[in-house]
Length: 194
Image 1 (tube, one colour):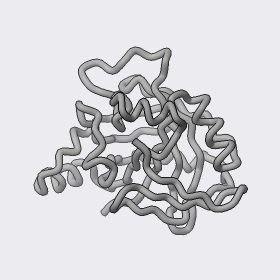
Image 2 (image 1 turned 30 degrees about the vertical axis):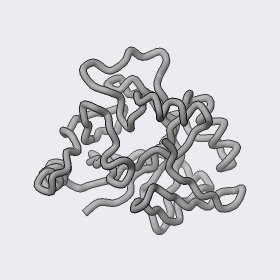
Image 3 (image 1 turned 120 degrees about the vertical axis):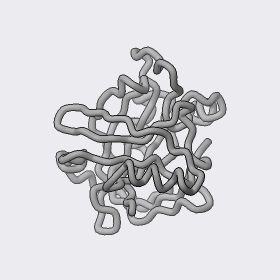
Image 4 (image 1 turned 90 degrees about the vertical axis):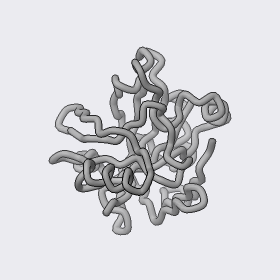
């Protein structure tokens, strides 16, 4: 059992990601944080809806002030030249993350089906703590169709995020990612890039 947790929008820089969000979705994303293990940083936007509760959009970019990760590639294929080139043309949807109640059980199930989602890695920032599956090669699973699984601790990022005016109406992950959102500017459809 898994639920959509968040959509991942990649950007060449966090500033470009914020400008994209303001232009395309009509709102300014909240400051997120830095991921020291991955050498990335982010901005966040609550996109929860009745259909997709406790859901957010993460705008992520390589942090130019952080050293590259040691012994592993950055997540979501961010180190791949082809994806970096695609993101230079503009930010876009690159992946999704699914919330699971038991990460170890989810990883064991996927391994039994021949899917290597990586190993569970613990992380925290402020009141948030989570465990997420990370592959050393940083690759998205079967391109974008399978999510990165995550298990949250007691708090979830959306618990402290204000309503943004953007809601995720539906999401499709079969033949490429497609997300449909309602925004202050009208309905927006995001499709995977890279």
